[in-house]
Length: 134
Image (cartoon, rainbow, N blue to C red; front, side, top):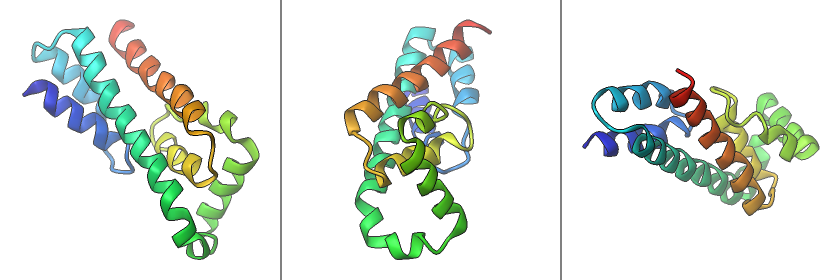
């Protein structure tokens, strides 16, 4: 039950919902889940969510393009995504700005496998740092 809660929280935290998967990660370890399992479960949920974000951006962009381009923030995000692409993904592990970047990656049609390797590795790396440096 602890692992399922951690997975769901890590998934939701990687969407645009304001959840903290880091707190859930610490809570799961404190509740008795070993660090390796917690790392695997949190990373799996988080990576599945960034795949969802990418797909959402990829498939909804054409349907909502006109509306999106009217919004200043979205217009700026798309410009950054087109201009910086994979370099912008280096910030995708950060709270608040990272999750929208995974959505923009789908909108600007970054290569999915390169996206997954880069953004996924950064997510796993963040959890490793949190678990083993504290």
